[in-house]
Length: 100
Image (cartoon, rainbow, N blue to C red):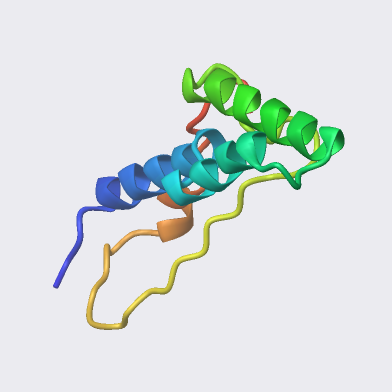
């Protein structure tokens, strides 16, 4: 089966955007629960609050969630029965996100 290489570009763009700007709902729920946890320290609540605030900022896709501590990495596995007929790296490693 031959895959349109633009599909790789779209896949990479979506994956990097999701990793850079959004957190899983389950993770956000855990952070929010810290704010109401009677056993949480003031520091626990402060860190949870700042993380939730950063989530709101990053959800606008102007600044990535983790602005100072890391780079989003997306890993994919190619199955031999599928191909694009081009150099996949050209489509996977284009710079897709502004401000990153």
